[in-house]
Image 1 (tube, rainbow, N blue to C red):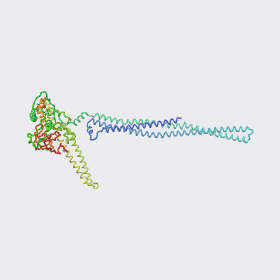
Image 2: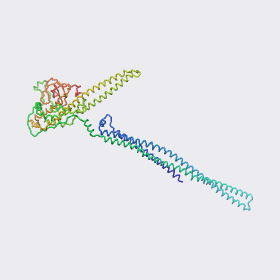
Image 3: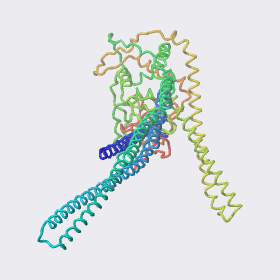
Image 4: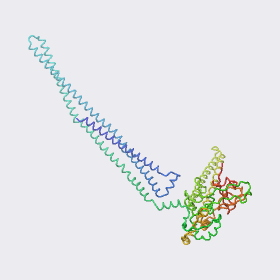
Length: 614
């Protein structure tokens, strides 16, 4: 009698199964999305090829991070496995089972409805037979009463009485027939009802119960599978995590520190101690324009022991650059003479007297000038002029060790390019051989131009390799020589470098109000420069970038200038930087500055460092 309730319950069971299928499906989508995000995360942090990031992964900490990224990629793969297994083993199987369950349920309830309809039909037949039997009995009773009434009435004819008697007999016979039919239908209904409640419906309910129990068992098995799918990937996920831990334990701080040292080692010597300058004892002296050069020999002899200590303050600075820094003109150049001939001015134009700055101030300027540089090759006269932007082809702007690495890297890159060109040449040669053997495939002569072009490229690259290898050999030779000199001098440096107090920096005020310095300090500056001669004699002088012709006679009386005679032709080694002075050379040992307006400049446009004015 709970047929409708069972129908609702079984439908609820199917809804629960479909809800679980939806839950597992959404879980698989989450796993796929999570795996995709993990892969994207790992890919986003992977080093880009041929970039600076790729070079950073030589450190153990970065290698460990790279291993972590790779393991996270595998970790994401396991979540994809979870999604695939749940889809194939749970979602697809349960979806198929739900369709079968719906068909089975439909079949069972169709049989139940059919049995219900049959018993209802039997009940309707029974009611119909019963009503007919009741009606016939009433009709027979009325016919009998009418016959008795007609038989008792003396006024009624015998024919009417006989007619009423026959009619009563007919009605009685119909009632008997209805009774027999009702009895038969009743027995049949009772039998069908018994079969319905004791056979058909119990069987149908039993099938529905078995179907429902199978559904419950199936959803339980699916939940077990749900857990097993996760458990199957746990060992692999554990291995991924173990590899991450192993990568973390493989970091080596000492090795990374050594890599940093090798990457940024400059090859410069550390500076020596700075001597004490005592300003408490004012002493007067008169400085002549050429006192610094006149005292060079004496300063070198008197301060040679202490000069070594001073010499280590400015490593890798050429003497002419340092002296140019300290003695180059800091004043505007004199204007050219009014007359066309120098005879109008007997003594010739001279640079005006300049107030000499204290030498210590020049050193302070040297030490505190900004921006800081890593190589002293870009030092120019009159202060600091730095070269930013374009990098020299020979990497001369870098410290020795960094320059060696860059040159070696450039040589390796050129060798790779040569190998590519050679491979291309071999391929073209093979193709040409094929064309020669099979002319229908192509014209062999069409490849000659390409072969010639590739050959020229290879020759150019080889010349480049030779050029960079020469620079590399030069740098390696200097580094090895310097290292040998450092090892040779390290044992005696401390004994030859006792602390000293330099009183030569005491100054006094000159009569014209300018501050000058002691001659001994100028001598010491000369020692500072000349002490570097042993280390830098192998450096080539500045190359000439053009020639010039003197338009007027100039007597260079200030330190850093050079005298020229009208009509004299000299070499230009440094053009005017905007301060009105041009640096020239007469021979290898005689060079200096002259006013730019006193000379006619002919720059060599092909010379290194020359500018092109438009």
